[in-house]
Length: 81
Image 1 (cartoon, rainbow, N blue to C red):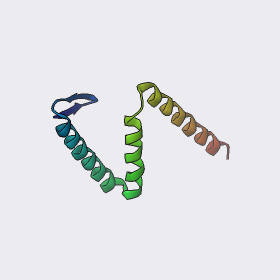
Image 2: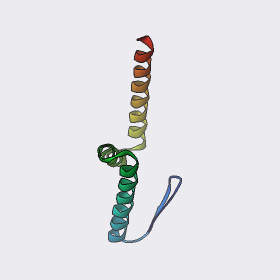
Image 3: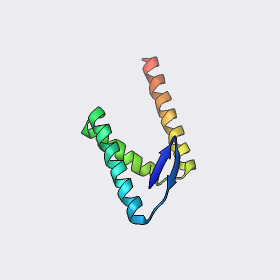
């Protein structure tokens, strides 16, 4: 069994159960994203989800800081035009 409430995750059960529930959760997330944003965005989003799931907290924080710097750079470029 997998439960998640605002980032607090609890897992219980054997490997087969956890794998099965993970697949079902990801399929539902994929469907929800695709309904809202389309197939192309969904593929990028699911890849990002997978990549982030393999990273440490520090690596995620570094990625976030890099993204914030890139957004700030683009805003600055737009303002200068």
